[in-house]
Length: 297
Image (cartoon, rainbow, N blue to C red; front, side):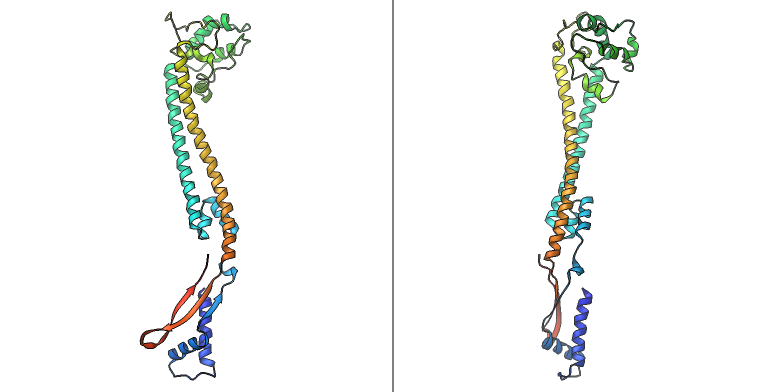
């Protein structure tokens, strides 16, 4: 833009110095300003689009990386603020939700460690399981309860669970501390016998018979359901974090698309002109006072 201005100024100087129609005072400054007033009282120079236009693809890329960046570059400040604010809000929401999910997960897993026991579950299988549920093709004798108590060897339990049962027992106890381990023990009724509120009237470490009533949780019902609710809350937090992550991707894409079209609109609206206007100055001298750039939006 400085080049355009100096071109106009050069034109004025040439007009003053080489016009044969002017009577000069001998004062270069006065002769220059008189010439500006008489011959170019207002000189307008229009910039071409190539001087100021922006690349819509680059602005779209900017917003794809950082939502609102492309809009900011095209001076759409309200849109830039909206996309950037959405980015910050979604990131904060995702982080908070994920942290809450981790906290809730630690809580219900600690509860399971304190109140559910694979050895108790295995003793019920040994004493009552075969007679009430089967399976008919798997024996459950000479089991190593010490290995089960260490919560590292569930192979014998899994063998019995995978047998041909008369009713229920459609799942196998997952590996200890696996995500599925903590989920299944509070989801399927076959694992009710491992909870410490399930009745043991003989107080011998063997949960009582349920008489083949798979859905009868007896005194463990509240504990079973409360645990499932707490586990569900953790999952809800993780779902919220996942939703926020998806929304972040959408925000990036929408901002990129908007930046592309905003740049096209910016380029179409763009007009710029310089105005050189002589005005009255001190002591009645006309001075070159103003250079204006007009860019209507």
